[in-house]
Image (cartoon, rainbow, N blue to C red; front, side, top):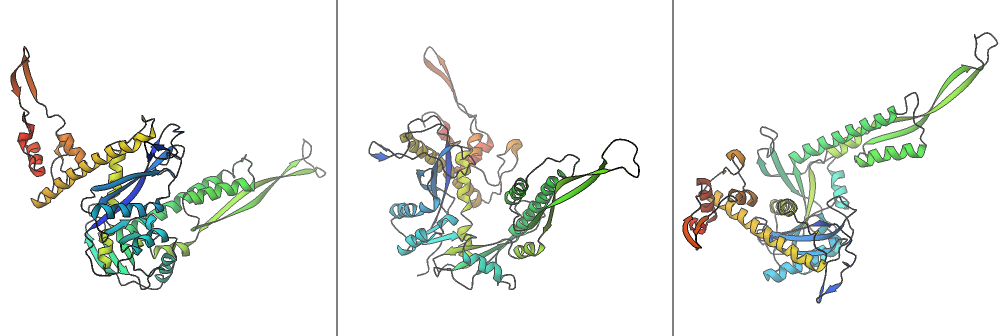
Length: 447
């Protein structure tokens, strides 16, 4: 495969949009010659399995995450089966197939990757933990140190004075099962977060196990069967994802007490009755060997590409643009507040989604133009936040709010315009218009 620039790339991902109501007829029926969306139950990314949904698929550019394509799929559609149609749509729109297609781990399946590769396409995706390549590397790294190449070394993005944000890459000595390069990534901050999160989960699990055990030590413990106790233990370990690290044993403890058979002063012939109380005894220990084993590969994850000409650094740079599309989904659900709850005819849903897509496109272009102008003019920040606090990366929402109170008034007498009061723009508003390339005359009458 010849060397090609990774700059022309597209990012693809999907989210779900929840629906309230029955939508009993929304089963993919034909409306005016087109198949309407199939609104049904599925894996809810909004954590609402009780509501029906649609799958909203979005594709954006790597330059500013500008949306270029969207479509709807049935609410129970598997994400892994959507990439072939998305890639075909991009080929038709661009008239080429040598762009770099970047997606999350849902792309990493034999059908989707094979489909793109057979048509001379290129892709970058995340290799899931379930693949054997991942397990073999984590075993190998227990006794070996990869020859890491440093890509970035920068200030902590969230904590001033905190540990530096360092990123490294390494091309695995073994290719994937398909024969493609596997690029391992190591992030120093991700390693710290993973280790701390594991420690917190283990500590929380020990607290809950201690509370459960303490409930059996009181004077009148609630009677539970072994099955019920084991079920509660398993629920704690699975919910906190510590099954691998905490070993729990459930044993039966017997407490014996003796009481006189009859009331009165005890004597040499007094008979006693033994009373036995059964309690559950919970014991656990943290498997430190497994904790240490996993800590050796904390902060490491693999990327897979079929383009052998890309360097490990280029693969990481392409992958690091992927989270920007998550920001677009967040804006759709928060800023734009997508909510097709008033639509009873599912045939209009996709049309409504198209309007949201256009709104997202305009919003993204405003942001890209604004940030690009600030970079060209070497402006580090602009006071768009309340109390004129500095903002380093202005959003379209903040820019539009800045102009939300701009008004023009006309004084009318007997049906005739007497005087026009033009809007008075602030210095900040004039600066923003200049950065966006919009003339101030756009706020004058007749323009």
